[in-house]
Amino acid sequence: MKKLSDVGRIFYGISIAGIGFPTIYYKSFPYMLFPPEHFLNAVPAILYYISGALLILIGACIVFEIKTRQVSLLFGGVLLLIFCFCFVPYEFMVNSNYKHLAEWENAEKELQLAGGAFLIAGCFSEKNENHLYRFLGKLIPFGAIFFAIPIISYGILHFQFAKDVSTMVPSWIPNPIFWTYFAGTALLGSGIAIIFKIKPVLIAALLGTMIFIWFIIIHVPGVIASPSADLGGQVTSAFLALAYSGIAFVIAGAAKKKVDLHVKEKSI
Image (cartoon, rainbow, N blue to C red; front, side):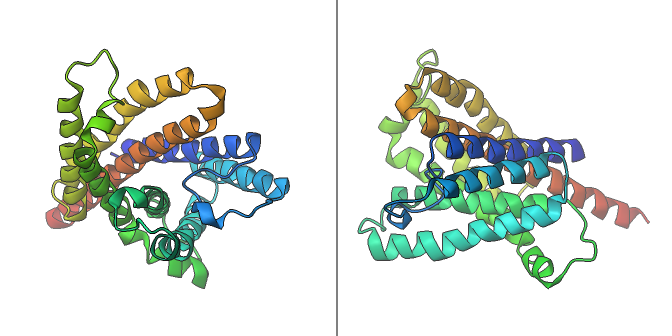
């Protein structure tokens, strides 16, 4: 299962780096990074270049295991700060529709990426860490929860907006409404199972596989067929799906490691 965690880490790192390239090319922050009201009227282009370059660098460090724990902890901490001090105030103070679950979708994506970063950090042992890293390391156990709560939310949205979501099912797959409800049920069940640690190895592995299939049959064709005006958003959505798949695989790998350690301790 370590290989599964490694695959998940690589998926996540590739996704973060991949999101960095359109940030630079389009001179625009990823749509889920900041709430709309937090954009300045005139953001200097250099900020987009720096942000994109940092995302690429962070992704590369995660993929190639260069100070991965420290980089992941800092990245997860920054994303969590944006969620707490940008998205949450925006939803309650600016967005009049904050009671609608769909309005929290981008905030949840931010939270999931933060959770994924903490989970990846947890795959690496701490060595001579300073106070900041030790503090951030205390958030590692919450990584799976940060990831799973939005998964439950997405499952609910599959039922609330079944007709709209069904349009995403490829035309060559029959009965799109059935698959929409199936996906919603799978997301709901997976999120609950991960939070309550109900067969987390199997459930997280299946969830990661399902989302990876979506990446292949929905998001990749969406990028290929997308008009140039929408390409940046489609690329970001595709990389987000790959990142979620990777996070689920990391959860499965970490859960299997705990099971193996428990079995080993009992046998001694």
